Image 1 (cartoon, helix red, strand yellow):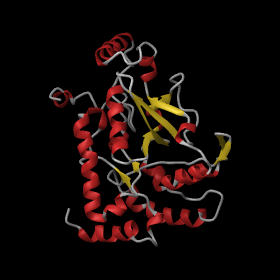
Image 2 (cartoon, rainbow, N blue to C red; image 1 turned 180 degrees about the vertical axis):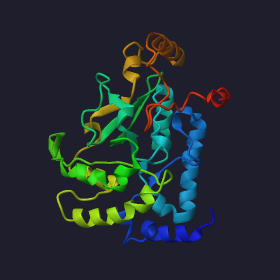
Image 3 (cartoon, helix red, strand yellow; image 1 turned 90 degrees about the horizontal axis):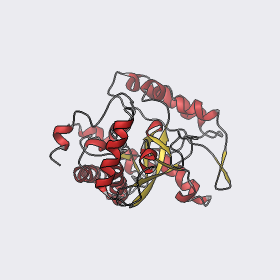
Image 4 (tube, helix red, strand yellow; image 1 turned 90 degrees about the vertical axis):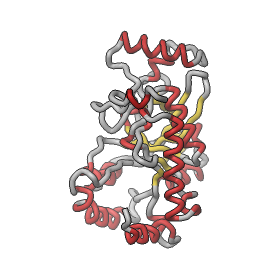
Length: 291
């Protein structure tokens, strides 16, 4: 809000070729809307608005290097039609990958929990009409704990991991977390010093710091494609697809969801987030009713 000197400083690590390889910006929706409860048309405009603002500050060349997307509150829609439009928006806006919370996705084949969160997954979004779109998902592990990130816990977790097979090739795993600085002073006070210490310790070792897009481009060079990645979908969709005929339409989907909600009180289409006890849909009815 008027602190131009901050953005001038950020231009160095964003635009200068000598420094920009050391940082990766993630896209976000403008205004912090949560995807499960934001009309899909509006959400698309929020994603575009962020890109316009970023380009106005740092230029279009820098915007072209923003390939990852971080949803507000880590909120991933699990309603099939909403998730389909969400992923469709990200693809249309040029994003290659999206950051997702570990417990907001499930295995496609049986609806079970993700077996290996330290490898990229292929997030599949299918709607009621049978249309499907997919995007690479990078899984954020642990809870939304700024203390873990401030103490660089991902590095220490990564040191205990080893290569695992993917598409017939041994690949290094990637440990990804996220934190913001708004809740308390942990990130502001503890992170800078610990970050410098870990970067010095990790550089040149078998556990190097890496940007996600850099990591995915490394997999590209190994010949690994998105189709080789393990498939995932938003939580609770397996229950829908078990009883929904592919392409049956929105009306049948609505009835299927209503039946599941009647039979299982734990079933919901509220989406998933960094927290399992907050709904990003309930309480937003007065907004969604006017869509």
